[in-house]
Length: 59
Image (tube, rainbow, N blue to C red; front, side, top):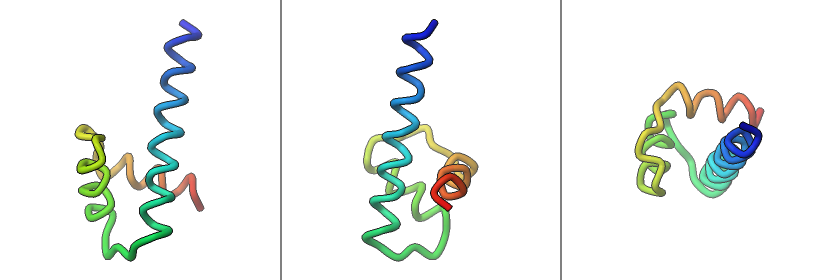
């Protein structure tokens, strides 16, 4: 169970890092634009609510 939790935390951190990288290097008019970029980067099942949560985490 610990392994799964660690993998989950690592995956969440990678998403957070990507989101930070995207918003640091580009201007976006909406969370949906960020979501589409994350889909292009391989996170095919990410929703707008997940992007919102990531942005909130980044402050």
